[in-house]
Image (tube, rainbow, N blue to C red; front, side, top):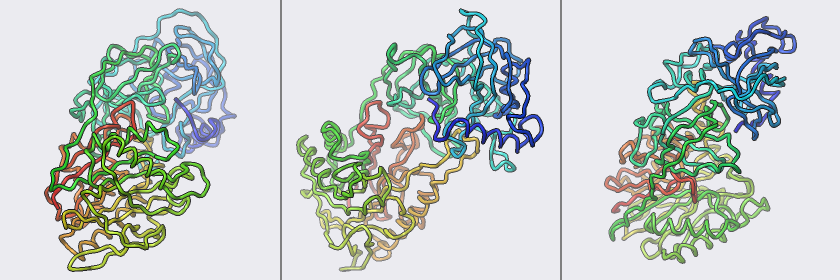
Length: 615
């Protein structure tokens, strides 16, 4: 559903101004929208034009004819209508959205004429980088007749969507593709844009993004495209955007027909048909007037193998803002996952443990209550009596939910592993590395890595700990790097999209890499594990910086390419969570344990990772 962080009128004005400056708007470059006369005898394809920006943006149009193909009574209220006659040009859509702002007084099948202002609305505001949606606003609508057949839908299929994703943006326009002529037979984004507002349909399609709390799911119309054995579609490089992905929403009120619950790998069978929309939270979206039926393919949650006696099992799990106010059911479900799906790892690094009052912004920083409730729940479901180590952050200095004070925490099974405590670690004091008894040692354990660096501004500082397993020292560094907030989406009008958040993660990766090198300088055979929610891909510059100089290896790369993912976002199965190993850990078993990301019912939105090795 459409939403924006800026008023619709502000976003429209910004696009009009940009279109004028770029010469995309017919008329004088010095004209304003208010000065432009009403244009008559206009058809919808004239409004849509053959680029992303309407040639009539800002102008008044009168008596535009068409048939209503969809009505939306929630969110961005309005309706779509379509010219049944068309101009035969594949680049110009014959449908367009009419923004009414209140419940529309039209029905599907109404033949109407619409007068109003042509606008380009940017969902999320112009700073988001999103493409714009061509609309008619402030409309006057006349119903000519009712009960007409809607125009025949365009079938979107594996054969109609091009393999290439998008053209390169115009360097003269800051990398934007807005002014480029659409090439719908060459690029997937151009193909979808050429159908913006038009009535489309898909046939039976595999679900690649589970139903979310906002009543939407993702399918692919290309069943072979970067597929994996569990039914997802894998995002394996910046050039693997997966062109067949399409978001599905429903125009049918949920009270009349609940939105289907689907997991990855399920199949949306039959025909799904409706107008093609563009929104902030997924880009091109089929807003279904007719919705197919979900066929449950029975996807099951995975269970990792239990470590053998001489193996050390180390895991990482983002538990999504866990605090004592969460229902006991969440604690129990997470605890059960630790015991049954992760096989009670010896060391478990947790991300997003909140303080004892959660999001209540009251200055509390201790998470002892959160951790007691969680470790008690693990014991209750038959797991070990884990002990924990962490360093409390300064209040509201580590990002995340205001007042929540999320941090990383080590849980460890004292029956199998011992923790080397070296006092003095606090939120602002950095741990260091010294050579001791012929090997490396931390000066503070647990301790934070370089917390004063600007790399960690408003972000979680790494937590380092020294463990002993069967007489061997193991260093573990738990991380939660900066989020991808602020990055432009794959459907940005900049191609390639701007990924501004990478700047901070690159600094964070360099800081962790330098710390690991300090350990290896003191002992080149040291066993070091860097793990956590890295918030970046295994092929990213962030991961490259972590591995610089051969200090670390991203263990998820030991898996087949189709198995490399821990998170599903907009139908792309991708890596965010990682465990990286120092050179001495050259033989290991790695598992991305898929228990959350592919499912409509989730205990967290991340899948945990487990690595087993013999120190």
